[in-house]
Amino acid sequence: MSSYNTNLAAESYVLSMLHRLGAAANLTLGNKKGVDIMVARDAGDAVTVEVKGVAKRYDWPANNIQSANPGRHFVVLVSFEGQIADATVAPRCWVVPLPELEPYLREYKSRRDVSRSAVLKTGQRFENAWSRIMGEPAV
Image (cartoon, rainbow, N blue to C red):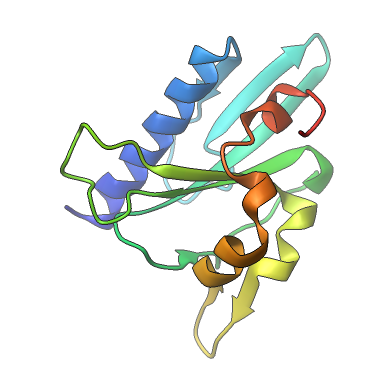
């Protein structure tokens, strides 16, 4: 499976989860964008979501993570855990507000990644934290 299809599968999964929770969420169109999903919580209250998906247990590419309004932007890290072809297995997801992503970023010569090992070590509060996007207090 190509990385493009992996990311489409990840975006579709996140959109599905948000709809299951009752969100007014819409997929944005276009390639090479920083916003994959728009969520209208209430009149005048919208947030943006950027989805990063990987098929295996890898770091997530983060070269293009940015937002004009970081306090209203979330990054959802999706890992299919090496089982992307098995439709009976749900991916693992971490919902991270953009301002809280910095401790997980790693800089290399030619790229920037979100460190899987760092997320696993200290990011438990973000796993399946869909309520953050919905505007509910974090648990």
